[in-house]
Image (tube, rainbow, N blue to C red; front, top):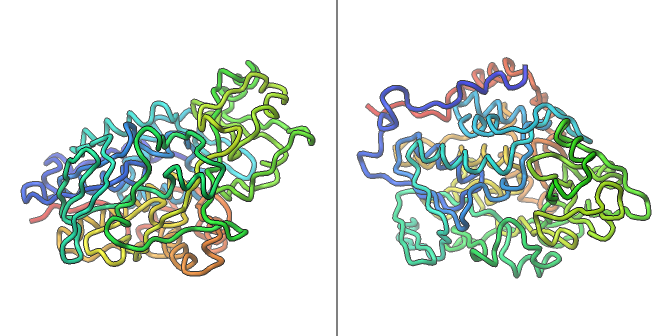
Length: 452
């Protein structure tokens, strides 16, 4: 049965409290830079492992593109989420599941999706992080890194505040700043990343002197465009609003003379299907999520139901969207960045993996290995017998090839989902997933036993 594992996922060290996990009393600190889904997952794992954990976020809100995303558990993402839960890393999935607007919905090319409320969920995540002792610092745009003998010692933000740490995790993403959107896209579209207000992304990996990797499009151009827009739901017709709120999805045919084809530029190739060219696909995430990178507002308002439509994100959704995959970190299977002894990475910073589930899985792995390094333990590498392990290893292999850099990888579609299905790793049978995780020796791998 889908979602049968939601209720018991808020796990702490047990009745002895977080300190039983061992490191706070020793003063070890983990600093996570970037508070998207990957950064939040890394911070959860670092706190669970007992490290004093600081999460730095450039803007004034958590979740990054998760502020306007909202899709989880579709296709292979269900398998990946349940594998992560079985490994003991289900805390953020529990937060998501408690804030879903719709569950088990289908839309073109995708089955059994959950849509979380992008308005309520960020606050719920922040509250949870505070409960487990993560020190969240917003409006902390890291601009300097001090290194010594191949290690990062501290980072400093634009306000002059310095944060020292023993391990660091880079989850700064790959989108922005504005000049990249102008150079590789259609200009700054005023998206939720809000570079004009808070300053553009600064990569911790880059500050540490590591040369980063850029993804490409099929034509060889650099980067990829964010794959969806958000419309103010109340700006749509009452009938469309009713359909969205009752069913979670609305598929509206587009007259041939008004159609626009932007599938080739999308970061989210799992939605680059003919149905998304012939129709406007809307999902209810609190906003009306329009599954196209951009769509001319003049054309949009000529389609029945959209006569007074207005974009919520990006504000210039009639002309473009944010550019992504411009600065990825070279790393090993434990998510450790090459060339820096105490730096880990996750989310889009770690490669061409697209989506919230993908970010949470890699964030959990990076945070776990950051703490394992503090504890003097061997790093955790996920086995390829699991969908999550196959994803990390396969994407790493493909990114070393020119053709691989032109693709995007996700549990929910495109090349990675097809591979997972071919390997027999995709299933929605929770019992089977748990057994497979146990057989791989990974049950509870994201938990930390108390240090004796």
